[in-house]
Amino acid sequence: MTEPQFKLLLKLVTPLILHDPTHIQPITAEERLVLTLRILATGISQTAAAHSFAICQTIVGNIFKETTRAIYTALKDAYIGEPSKDRWQQNAESFEAMWNFPNCIGAIN
Image 1 (tube, rainbow, N blue to C red):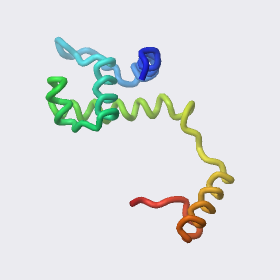
Image 2 (image 1 turned 180 degrees about the horizontal axis):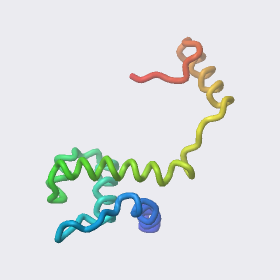
Image 3 (image 1 turned 180 degrees about the vertical axis):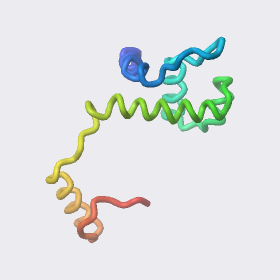
Image 4 (image 1 turned 45 degrees about the horizontal axis):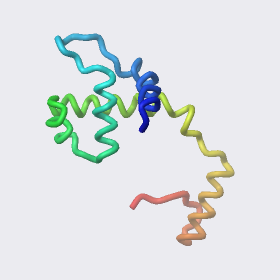
């Protein structure tokens, strides 16, 4: 992710993840986003991220859940479209051709 991309994402999610400062050193929106992106990009555990960022594991879990929801909320309309009826039909036909399983659009393994 480039710096301009990060700044744009930060601008979009900040209103959704910024909290009123109740501590002397609150966790900023930027730190929350960096923490979340690091977990998503590297696949490290929340425990490892907690140690790396010197933040309580419970807080890391809360930040991760809140920030991933904020990212989805901020980007869903621009980047995640709802499939059309034709697209669903195409997926079902493709799945049937590949797996001989009619009227199915996917499977969880």
